[in-house]
Length: 388
View 1 (cartoon, rainbow, N blue to C red):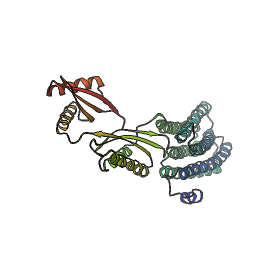
View 2: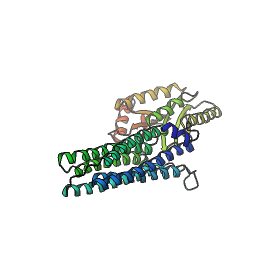
View 3: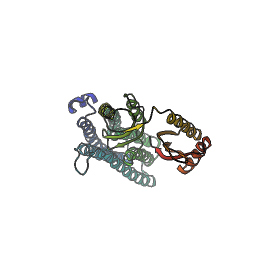
View 4: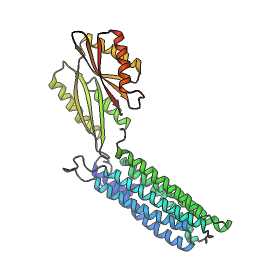
């Protein structure tokens, strides 16, 4: 069924890197969610009326909120597909994350309301009336939601969308919640116990858990999360594979929405190379890596001395001293400036983000180690906190 729907409604469905195709996947997922959840809501309202069950009625309104969430998903994908303009030169891709965040708030609101109605049912208990029609509706709902979970999971993974994957997680929590409601409907008349309110609490907790999980997954990229380590590794390994590029540093990755990643990086090249040739290599690397990784890559050329034995010797001493402080530290942009009474060793030190020492503490330790090699050595250090 999933493959059929994709072939019918997503033209050129295999080209998932195309923003237009990706948008159609998202709209398809949201549209299917609207239709299925509205029908399930109506069916469960009928079942809740027949049995007098607050948990079934609550589950119906949960489906109604899911339909609203699906509508927000459609709107988010439509908005994220807008072309860049003067006010938003990098496009509207983050609208998809905003849509996911709105969905999480709607789900959390439903969860709170479910708890309130369930507590009231516990305080004023009633034995449910069993109905085969209601039981059949709940079984059908479980099957439909299970299919929707698999459907959205496949779409979400295909286009790498947290919002669509969140819809899959929400559907899966609905399967568990509705199963609890069905169990309450079957056992309450048999055991003569008012299980309805307690099952409603269970349903509400699953709904709240789904809302919190979705909020966490969509809020993180909005706030600016660390880039994917695999993407970082691919950028660095691909760059150093080009002739003349001997190393990279200061990689920064900005996420403006799915498929809208902009990265900048410094590439080290020999200082004695032909500048036009080096520029041509950098341009080629930008074009090819951007196309291969579906990003916009900007490379800054950083000339370094590679054929001066004295500088290379000093750089190795500095690197050894720095890594004696902590082996996770690294050095780049090393330069030597000779003065009348001292030799200035100028370089940058890359520090892991969660490093527990301050820059001043590191400066003191590194300075002492290098001064012990020769008192005329004076260090001038810029500390870069690594976010990747």
